Length: 569
Image 1: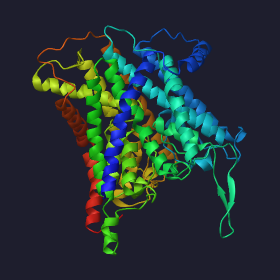
Image 2: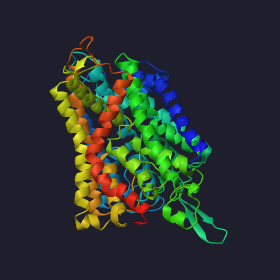
Image 3: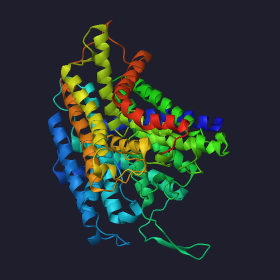
């Protein structure tokens, strides 16, 4: 550990906080349909989309209609992306003549990108042609991210409105978020990436001659545009197999910082958008404070763990102060690798600039815990925020039980319906993470993919299903996931982890929107101060700790204890 390494962490947090309020205000104006700087350019395009689709932009939807539109839209995206992969040999912009993607892998990939997971059981540059990368994967990067943000806005409207039967219009929210937020910001980020050395071309791979005279094929393509939205939309799927550890995806320290900021930007800004739309910005700052408390704890443990050398190497004379550089880029080092790993799993991004499988046991446990908490520590665009609001509902319910009065949040009574829906959404994640892990470690089809023995092999399987259900997409690389069993089971985990959370959440939004706001009284529990922040953090940790501690104990924790005793896996 170094002073420079520790300084980088608060510097990053400071930059995130700095951009939260202006971006949150911009998001609120987009959500409310206000006229903004881009309106003269984008409004005609927006109107064309509405006329072409036969949408009345002024008509709002009941939560059931909103949810049905969202589900049908994503189902259509799933079918289209699956078809693009299966028809790849017959499509243009395939200069490498790549074959059709297999049935199980195509379904896994389609589920992955539609659910904003971007789990990749393939090497991008060797499996997907340019058209599939752009018209399939990149388009879903935009649409899945826009879907998550739209759903978060719908839930915010549930808290902000009174005696309302609608929570917005899904088609309008999706269109405005894409045109006014994701598209222009992605263009700016892509231009900066190209300036820093990221390729953006439709040309074929480059043939190079090495110093030894050998021929080498260097894959290029429309990289910058995909990297921009994969970060801003917390998608995470890399154009290259090495993801953001690849020098073409992440060429410099500046691009590394930009990518880390892009991952957190919208998720953090939504807390401020929430505060503005409910009429009290302090409510948003309280939620962001709870998120940052969890984030600081995670990144501190990860950096401390990775700054320790493996005892086996220390016994061979390696300087313990050198830390664990296995699986890390020397241009980023330990601190930025630990910071990136914590960021990408605190959000549902999944992009990596170091291999998490090579982290020390406790260092690798931090990304696991981030995802097992439901990725509510900033979280994916939209998904992290509405996931945290589900915990807010639970925390308010617990506070009401402790003081013996009906729980309220922002003047809305939290009753049995909202608590039941919140628990349904929260519990579906551990069901997928732990249930499918249990199946994989007892079925021959699951065991055959484990390439490392003992607790580390178990951690690889647990990480895979945790990442899938949490819609993250990062992986412990030691698991052979491109098999029929893992492709189908991971696709199931991704689907349930996304949509079985969304539907109960929309039910809460619809229920809250119909309620009247109750004026605060002397007995009202304040939800914008340190006490509420600590209560919210405690609820998130307790739910995650009680649920996942047994699995963590037989995975990374026992691996750490065995490593200290000289036993390696």
